[in-house]
Image (cartoon, rainbow, N blue to C red; front, side, top):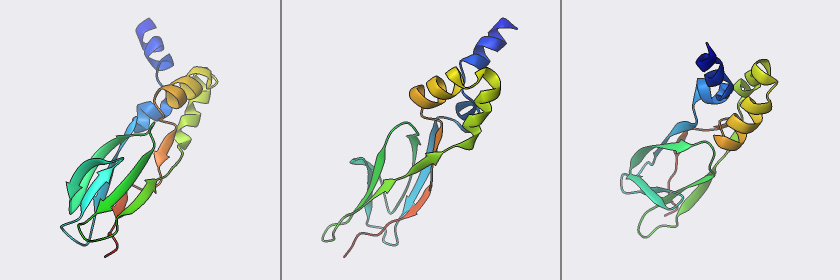
Length: 119
């Protein structure tokens, strides 16, 4: 019983129900476009990657001879976080776990992107 209580108190609702990362799908109308997230290569033509909610990201589409296109990945508040108010009034579960430690109190506004470089 004690270990269950400790596990609940050390978890935030948003991180328990929705996780601390999200999958992102990116594709282009051209199979030769290379995709990067924060300058890390993730694929060509289409790509799928998993990103931590805590960090900030930019998607870049590049093709030789074309102008690259960069888009920010925006986030908004995840309402599941508010369930932490029932556990400990949100002191640990919302502020520390879902907020500071994991970033789970946010979710990506969009998880599917179609990005074409300007040619």
